[in-house]
Amino acid sequence: MPTEPDTGYDPDLGRKFIFVTGGVMSGLGKGITAASTGRLLANAGFDVTAVKVDPYLNVDAGTMNPYEHGEVYVLKDGGEVDLDLGNYERFLGVDMTSDHNITTGKTYQHVIEKERAGDYLGKTVQIIPHVTDDIKRRIREAADGSDVCIVEIGGTVGDIESMPFLESLRQFAHEEDDDDFLLTHVTLVPNSKNGEQKTKPTQHSVKELRSIGLQPDILVGRNEEHLEQATKAKIAQFCDVPTEAVFSNPDVEDIYHVPLMVEDEGLDEYVMARLGLIGEALPKSERDNSWRELVTRERDGSVDIALVGKYALEDAYMSIYEALKHAGLEQGVDVNVLWVDSDEMRDTHTERLREADGIVVPGGFGSRGTGGKIEAIRYAREHDVPFLGLCLGFQMAVVEHARNILGWEGAHSAEIDPETPYPVIDLLPEQYDLQDLGGTMRLGAHDTDIQADSLAADVYGADSCTERHRHRYEVNPEYIDELEAGDMVFSGKAGNRMEIVERTDHPFFLGTQFHPEFRSRPDRASPPFVGLVDAVLEQVAKKEIQA
Image (cartoon, rainbow, N blue to C red; front, side):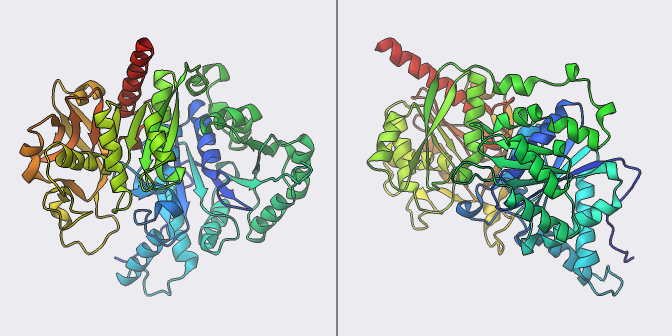
């Protein structure tokens, strides 16, 4: 029977909500600020989850260009989402689902489907209340089971795309009890030419918030340095918040130090006091201090890893950068990533490849840069350089073997060369005749069986693993026996699907059809990345002995 829209509001659930908005400009670090707040609350003993709101009309991030939006992060349920969800998983140590990412496209699609089904009792369907009610319902449902839900509103205040979400936020503030709702506004505090910290952009941003009925409870100022006390006092005076509610978030070399920075500022204590959580928090002496101990741990030396890809943008490979950093934390070394443009494999980039202690070839789509990736894989194979190939990197390792070891001239992926005489990589059977591109790849967590006494078994320390996938193409089953006739072995399989490849004639050569970087955490580094860094350290030690 048709029903009225449900906002999910239940005053008896006792959930706490922290909304995080941004002003002046995008890319200020709202997500890191929100994730750091969540990390500190988790340290204090609370069950914390997060929601990322993206105001774009795409249903999800799956069809977006990495140049424009950074990497597409994949969740365990196959959700293709904004990279900020990756930061939330890494900082909070939780696995999220598609329900924790809300987009304009997802919301409007659902509301229109309900209208077509007659679920609105013949009413005129409008932004208010139908769209805003759906937004509120989604947020509250994602918060179920947690003590605190942190909701990041993407974009900046004043964007036309964000207006339905900010209106939902205004309604939220009226529906929730005062001690169950908190609004944090992150804004830029730039320096003038003479180094003075300017507050006017923050004032205008807060004025914009107020014009739509929202008053921030906390202001976080982004500047290269800590905010001066006079700056905080001026922001407080003109933005109508207590001086103690104005916090600094200065630039740091490592994003994992941000929780330490805002903790030293007292942000967590203020948040807990404002939400009435002080009495429920663990005493300071009993709080989890492992994050601080982990990210401040002394490292002994460094290694250089070449990342061979076609997107000259760090955000396009964010999870790989972070997974390498996590492996370095576990192995006690700093990992320097040397960017190698697979589309410009000459001069500077070729020299970087030769200087590297290890090589990573990441995933990707399309033909551009694949020649350079194959060249890098060949170099790693011929010079015994520790190698890790991910998704497309795994597939190009198979192509390189077919061409240069088996002598199959023209061997390639059918994605890159549909006319190849040896399509060693081919389209997944279930991908034929698909009409839609969005959300139709092989996505999410899948199990892989690992061959005993293999490099993969040593790396994982187990006979199986569960990792996240995002691909349309796979190793062609028709060629497997011939491909394995030499020194290449498919040591990880999911039925008749090849998931892990390795070489028996190499110190460390591993490729995975899946994306292990998506499950890597600062305190639980991804096994393939740890294996790579460990192999690099062994190779470096051997070279030092020989020298």
